[in-house]
Image (cartoon, rainbow over all chains, first blue to last red; front, side, top):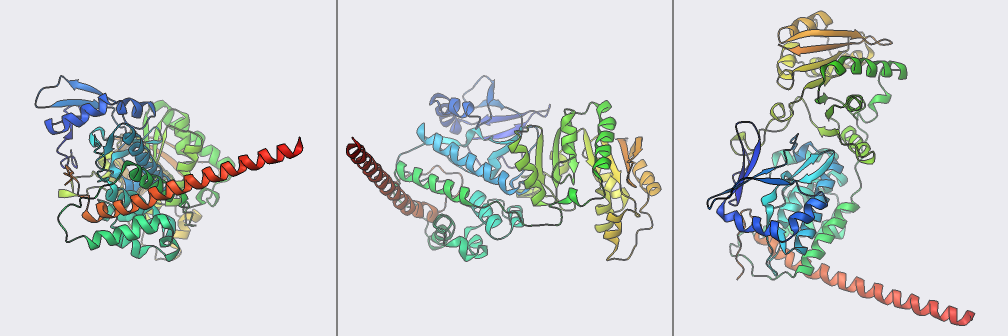
Length: 448
Length: 55
């Protein structure tokens, strides 16, 4: 698969049925067996830190193939809120600490080794472990600082939006750049001062040297570094900038009774479909995703606003929810198609496939703020799912009036009949319902 | 000379600085533990003194 070419110990592939397997090469065999026999694997599974797997085919000299637990939804670090990235970082450190106790170590600490399953982060790269040689420094230290500490520090101290730098720098944000972007108050802190600023300078200083340093680093030193990284991350304050969307549901056109009405209508429309999964586009803090959770639908709730995604994730962790996956996505410019040949990471329409897409009070933003014709919206949405629930907000609604207030109304086709016609080319209209107490209508479409 | 089977680039500078940070932080741990042990011993000694005084 896309990014699985770097590690000589093995690679990941998908079979014809779409099931993912991990192929372990002869080079990776010894470390894999050490993982299993040392007791580390059992310890990791017991703590829920690593995905489990079953050996798939009997081992030959050439290869051993294992079938890991399948991950329902693949998401990427630039799609995570601050706390999601932080939890992924702390998970990685916890795993490295545990590994050292069993005389093993992580050979890489990429953020892409972590995925969210049942609402919690879990490590997915079974082949990341190798035998620990006492005295040898942690070779994944640089990667940890760039993938985790740098973006977290930038989000906490400079601006929460800077996690998007991870889309540009797929191996983590360079430390010298991070140091330039961080304010002084951040850099004087010992943890960040060491692991970002001085670390970055050491990289520059030694850049022209090509002989590996023969330095000895004791295990106690490694453990001290891990504790220091953990402390530095825990001390970062969760960013809470007021953005347009932060308190969205308090500022909408819904009275509490109209909001309940909408929730009831959604339930009535979706229950008969017996859907198992859904994608709530522009779902903000997950208020309506949870309506779907209540009828047994696992939901990905994506939104453009980092504060909304953060609020959603915090709520879901507090209430130990397992059916919610909050993700940070700008639908007009989603991430993916990154890396070599634009193929190491996949675009969202390939990854976020579900039974139902919900586009509640979303289309007016796409059609008016982003000038998208209904036809293009329909063509994109249909790549995600069989069913679509769309809430149409007419021009007379004050939310749309707000969008039009600072620009010329060049949208003669922004109305219900044009919508139905455009979507009718790609979908069949199954049901519609006016939301009482508002000017809005819910439509249920099925892809043709 | 230590041999590295790294497939990722660990960066010479990162290895170098780890040795320094590791030593400093580990020393810090030892120092902090020593302080805590000292403080605990002090507390114990003081509480024993007050109970002696009370009896």
